[in-house]
Image 1 (cartoon, one colour):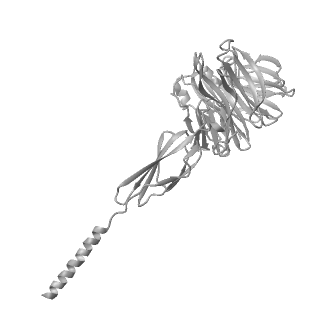
Image 2 (image 1 turned 90 degrees about the horizontal axis):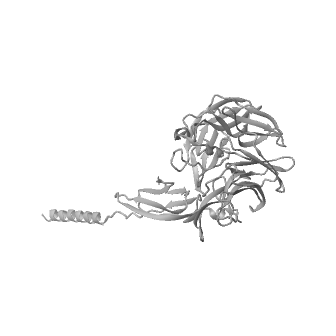
Length: 480
């Protein structure tokens, strides 16, 4: 009996210890934690976020990028923000018991304004860039702008058009007055220089108002003339001469390429009669087996251009048109019409290392293979897709296996298939070209701002500025 009692006591004691041991086991508390290597950056600058949570079985980072909510479950992520402002990064850590803990931190993202070169502009004056490039002789940047002083005692609509060249420190080193009038052709401007160091400026109007101005290097005015083409969109070197491209009109608008010598004398004009209602060439590039052009066709109605359809042209080395492709599913065709003055915009085509072609005009990006078969397209206009939309003049630069283009306020990088890589806010609204020089991408752009003026009130104006980025869309400071 005593032995049984002892065994019972031992058994009960073991059970008691077991129960006591179970009661002492507690689930470790989950702690949500992460670190950020930089909490103040400029748009596009990368930050590294590292998880330091304790006793978590799962973690989820969340943040917003260009309006889209992004989630990531890696313990370390590298990201950038394309827009300025305070951006929140959130972490949710889940413990073994299923309970969650959250933590949030903020990153202050600044714009890139401090990196830009701006120029003194009189109060009440609006300046809009209408063309830009790199000089063949010195490699300097240049741009053409329209300026208008709303506070002037002169005629309200009087505007000045100037050519301005930028020195190595991005200050204005040369400024030429091209024209000053109330009736100048609105549109984009391109410049060529002849053997006598005379500048010729060609302005592209809507469908009939193109003009040409020739000025000496010292600024002396020589002549104002109608352009040789109804619409002149650009020019590129051709053997020892230059070719100009655009459109001419008889019964309808036909795409045209014109060969001129270094004195701007016409050698030959190729007018291409094709089975399209009206058509033009907006850009032209030299490729291995000839030339490729990009433009569009349309029906000429008042006051809109109907059935606007992008067109890709293929030429041989003698500038004979071999074939052309139309992009019938273009979003631009579905807008109900394009205003005539939209043809004043810049159009761009580039061939990438893969052979793919990227076309950009009126806010639509089209990717095609080397034969012109469409691979993808994207409409990048921020505003409503209606025929009243004002398309902002925008640029494109070829990086070989990728490309960068500008949209309203943003610079965007894509791979050769048209997949988005990165975006940064830069504030530019009108950016005719993106210019590649020594692995640096330059942009000469106009942005809108408001001014409070005594005895006048609030005035909306545009301002021209020069900026630069590297190929990874990081800003380069031009003020150092």
